[in-house]
Length: 231
Length: 241
Image (cartoon, rainbow over all chains, first blue to last red; front, side, top):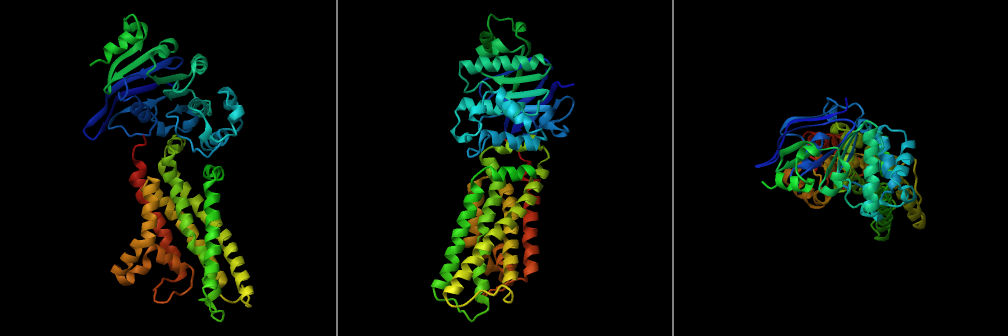
């Protein structure tokens, strides 16, 4: 069981309720898009699922366990959060070597994921000199390092050029086809429409829709999205 | 722990702090001899000179602060907690590794201080007698001071997760506040962190009341443990966003 299940998840920051009683499921073997306008609570939700933010109420379970209870978190769940979590003075390869060491992953995986995200030639340069797209690829490499069954990716398409977008789409499809659970947040709707099997849409921290793209019933994802998030 | 060592080896900051510390030692030892304050007949002169290896524990302190607060600054803390969701373990590993790093820092600084002192004593027609003057005791204290301050730094960095604020608070304490507090509390002042560090060197300072060496080491280790424990139960548990 490698599904993600979110039940009654709530986060209050003082008087502000960022995420409000959210309930949805993310099944294995499919790509689930996690959509919402800026500030809808997407990142907060993903960070709660990963144990970085403590929920005010509710649970987010991965394969039936809280993230902190996973015996080998990195080998179970791969996460891409923001493209800024790098020490600028470190090389891309060293960044991954450090993660491999914390994750209890064989260091041979470092070369494998560098190859996979097509960063091998830049691996020895300092991350401070990377472009946004290269950082995003390095983040993806880090997420894939532990060969996890579950992937949680926050805005993975940020900073990628059209070729990079197409590459990412193929990668996600392959990963889902291998039976992995893939949860991808995004606000690039045209990209999402081409990539995902189903969507979870939130607005102001509240669930607006969870289900297949077809079930939205509008002509386009954009029309449905704008209608669902206009209130 | 292995990871913490790798983190240190893959950036340039530790080497730059170490280099800066050696320059401060060279300048400090030279200053003592150039100023003419050094009384070659005084057996404490050599110890006072090599004791500069202890003063640079301020650099060890900063290194320790960067261990945690630096991870928040660069947001690598997210990855660290994703790999090790039990955050208390992260802080404990850093405490252990940085105490050892502090020892290395102290040993390298001691070598520099001894070399500089030996050269100046030779220039002044004296010589550095390592065997008889308690120099070893002072050097051991210097190493312990560096180790303790690196661990205290980890505690401060975990407690105050903003690098600039943590370094500012630490330096303000050492440069200004401890002196004021020391005057206010009188005899209790010898229990304060910097005064404890000075005590570790085992060299008497005129007019300053100091703990015995072993007592000072114990006090500093306790400071490190208290800071780390308070941090683990407060700031370290907070949301990372």
